[in-house]
Length: 344
View 1 (tube, rainbow, N blue to C red):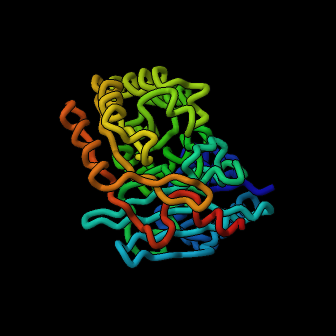
View 2 (cartoon, helix red, strand yellow):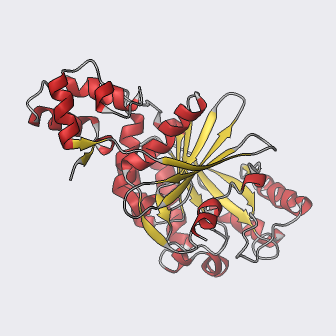
View 3 (spheres, rainbow, N blue to C red):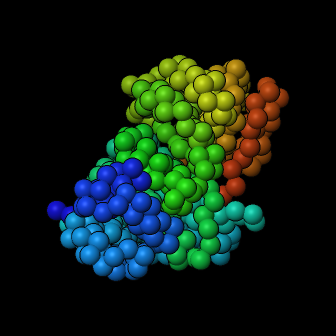
């Protein structure tokens, strides 16, 4: 079977090129053409010999994704892509482009499906199909840059799947996307979201990356969190908060706590005060998110007044808190909805 060349780090590619009998520096030329120039055929790498191009063709493949759907929001120009991953399993995943005045942010997926089974999320409907490879994550960026003709400047690993459940592939993707020979997107422009796999947070901390850690908290206590997030049965809030505090202290990077507001479940004045007491000694920010409507889920968001009261309580307790701007409501831009409709 041919090797997936886009999933090779720069160092791995150097070793492969040397094994083919070519000079080590050729790896830089090839890596640049594949990642920065976004070529899709080895014949397009014209700054290496025809013999080396032939060897690449014989030993490697250049993976590609298929754009199956592209929906553009009439509300805010958010663009949602449904990608076919190719291969025998014919799986799909999603990517959301969020254009801002000075930058383009891209929310990418790390798995096809998800096994975390959070009660409010469409991504987990149908469970986990498989992990994405580093190249399948990378290609979500490459394809959109080619499709739009614009550079992606910020990456959010917050699409379908739990990034820390696909840890090694995600770490490899981060090395690839950060490479100066490739897309060269700095770690400080990357945010990784987790539902709270505490052991992997400690592993991520040990990597000494400068990325932002976003944690899907969604409740101020174990009783509420366990109702909507099965991961809480393994890692209680106290353990998770300790891991987040350690991450912030070690990396000097602010942790972002994501908090979905669900009407009459986790949105009371008491809930806000309890949340503030949980996170008050951590370098952090709380991102309040009115819950998205999912067909199979019976959850509703609180009204704007109640949401603002919740935010104000946090602010009065000294917690930096904002309410997330909704993007792409008219194109089902929240995680998993487009993929779920494709499966149906």
